[in-house]
Image 1 (cartoon, rainbow, N blue to C red):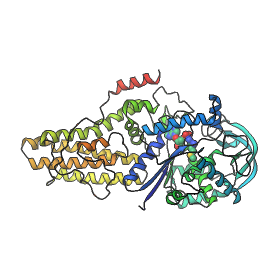
Image 2 (image 1 turned 135 degrees about the vertical axis):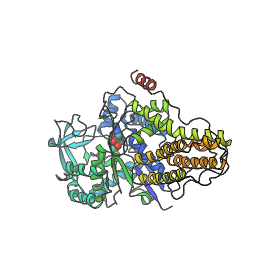
Image 3 (image 1 turned 180 degrees about the vertical axis):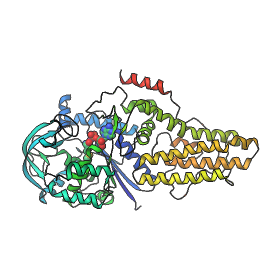
Image 4 (image 1 turned 60 degrees about the horizontal axis):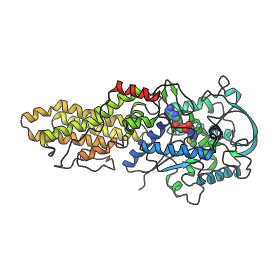
Length: 525
Ligand code: MSP
C-alpha cells in the first residue's frame, strides 16, 4: 500500500484522572484515523503520556509515593479510558519507555554536536503546571500568561537551544506553506504573540529537576520536558534506534493535532528542532479549541467550579461511549471553542443518536417487515423525488469524505447525519403506505431499496465516528460490518433479496430532565 497517514495526539500529563475535556483531542484524532483506514490509508495513530518534569514529581511527592508508582496507576487508568472510548491507537508511547529515553539522549547529543545547543544560565520565571519559561515582561499581573497560575523564580546553569536563529525561517515556513499551521487564526496568534518580536534562545536543560532524562554528556542536567516530550513523535517511530523502519515509512507526520494552548510548542519549537536536526517537517499542526465548562477550560489541575458530571466514565456507563463521541465531534466545531453542559449533551444524544441514527434504520426496517415481509426487491425506475434524493445523498457522501481529508470532522460527521435526516424526509415525501394501499409493488420495492442503500452508505460513513453501536446496524441488513468506504460507488451495499430484520433501536431516547437531574446527583454526591 502506498498511501500512509500518520496522526498524533499530544502525549498527556499523567497528573490525575482524565476528564471529558481531556478526551477531546484523542476522540477527534481517533475518528480521523479510523476514517482514513476505511479510505484505504495505511494509518499510524500515536498517543501516549508525558511523564517527566517538575509537575509530575510534585504530584508524586504530594501523594507520598514514587514517581513511577504514581505514573503507572494513572497510565493504567488512561489506557482503560481509551479502551472504553474505543480509541484505536496503534502505539502508546510513555516518555519513561527505554526506547524513548535512549533516542532522546541521542537527539540532544546530535543537537549539541551540530552546535545548536550551548551552555548558558537561565534567570527568569517558570510555570510548573505549563512547564514553561517566561520573562518578567511576559507575565500578566505577575502570573503565567497561559494558565493564570503562580510562577516561580528560576536561576541556574543550563543549556540553551539557538531558537532565535529560526525566527525568520519559521515565518517563511508559515508564508510558503499555508497548510502547515491550521486553522489560519493560529498563524496570526503565533506571529503576534511570539514571532514578530523575535524568538529568544530557549533553555533546554534543568539542573534543579531530577525527574527527567539526563543529558548524556553532562548528567547533572536533565533535558527540558518539552524537548523530551516533542521528540515522542519520532522516537515512537524508532528515530535514531536500531530499527527505524517505521520512521522511514511514516515520517513526516500528516498531522499533529494539539489544543490551542500548546500550539506554540508545536509550531515554533518543534519545527525549529527538526530543522536543526535536518529532519523533514510535519505536514500540518492543527490547533483545536477547548471544550469549555462555565466558560473555562477545565483540565485535571484546575477546577472551573462546575457542578456537572465531567467524568467520561460516568457518561459512558450511562449512555455508552458513542454519546461522548457524538457530542465532542458533532457539537464542538473542530478548531473553535465550544461549551459543554449536561443538558446539551443529553439533547444531542436524543437528536443525533436516538432520533436520527437509531430511528432511521428502525423505521425503515419496520416498514420493510410490514410491507414486504422483510425481503426487499430490486430497485426499478426512480420517481423525480427519489432521483433528487439519490443525487443529494451522493453529494453529501462526497462532502463527508472531502471534509475528513481537509480535517473538518465536525462537518463530515454532520453531513453523514444529514443523509439519515434526508432518509426520514423521503419517507414523508413518498408516503409508502399509500403505495401499499394502491398495490404498487414495484414502486414500494424501489423505494425501500433506495432508502436502505442510502442509509447503508450513511452508516458506513458513521462507523469511524460511532464505533460502539453503529456496527450492530449492519447485521439487521444481513451484512458484515464494512471495512472500507467506497469513494467511487454508492447505493450498492444492500444484497438483492436478502432478509432484513428491525430488531432493537440502536439508541433509546432519553428523558432529558430526568437524566439531567440524575447526573447532577451523581456529580455532587
Ligand atoms: N503534555 C503536554 C503535551 C505534550 S505533546 C508533545 C500536554 N498535556 S495535557 O495533558 O495537559 O493536555 C493534552 C491535550 O488535552 C492537549 O491537546 C490539551 O489541549 C487537551 N485538553 C485538555 N483540556 C481540554 C479541554 N477542556 N478541551 C479540549 N482539549 C483539552 O499539554
